[in-house]
Image 1: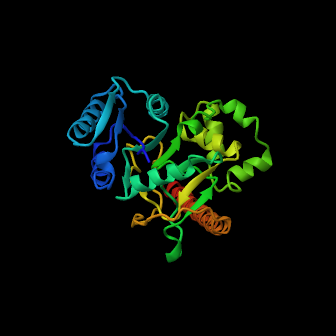
Image 2 (image 1 turned 90 degrees about the horizontal axis):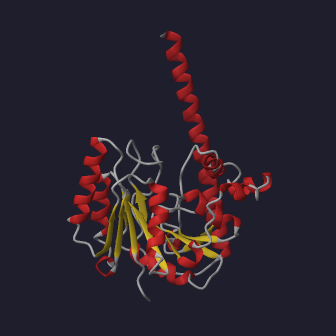
Length: 304
């Protein structure tokens, strides 16, 4: 098996990148993995330029097996950086593993990704490998297993060129393919905001890449390979994150299991039901929080 290259996308977060690199270096395949770094350029202000420079200093001193570094002079935005970066990689590679500058990885992350990409290479209905999953309760004897999921997660992911070539970046054409019933399936009965993301991209209110890949997979009735226990964790919530401002529940201990590769529909259905229940509970908790926040502000305004 030929190891997949790793595409590392970075911008202006030296604090999270430092941690990402620390964990990445612990991966057992890291010395054999060729890395492509795509560093987005700064926006037109002194603070951003300083932060981007710190990021690039970390890359220069990382001592990783970096095959190519692309440092952009001007800010392109994450969508253009991802799309352009993958286009560059697929000129000379048939598969890729993708990581951003706010993801920490298990030391077996690269092993899992390479084994999974090898496992799906001849399966035309599995387009995506994601390394992250919701923090659901998993039975001990299932922690080394995978499921097939319609949800696309991009906190550490990979795909083959033949699949990526099928991405549709035209929101108008995709939206026309939906009816109310399909929207419900797409959003897991309104538990996910992916329909809203697609519509907001169409209206120019958002400019993101992941929803186009997600929707392309969904409309082609393809699937995503997902571990029951995550190999990654997102640490990038907050002020300097591009799109993810709100914190998100995740597991505390990353997966270190050797995955047993087998597609078991009963297993997938069982854990997809658990994910569905998890999302339902999270939505209820979010609504309670939003109501509590609204009441608090109304009381505050009244007494002010």
